Length: 92
Image 1 (cartoon, helix red, strand yellow):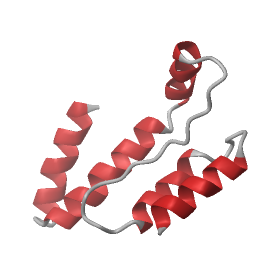
Image 2 (cartoon, rainbow, N blue to C red):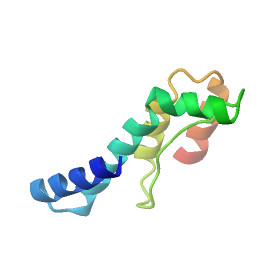
Image 3 (tube, rainbow, N blue to C red):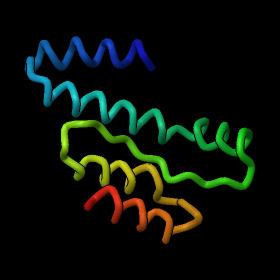
């Protein structure tokens, strides 16, 4: 993952050397990584029966990308009310 981030960072800076582009690329890589089935499998091993709401956020103040990550990472979540509560809390 860190190799992918480093490569994406270099590619983003070559294409458009701005911090916003790098944040978008980095956030997309993190969402992809957290969306990997191995993450849910590992969570099930570590905390059987738990179903955390996964999301990626950053400190730039814009919450729309965080809410989008909630939607992307929790499509099959067994507790839709918990996902909705996270959306409402983090989208506010």
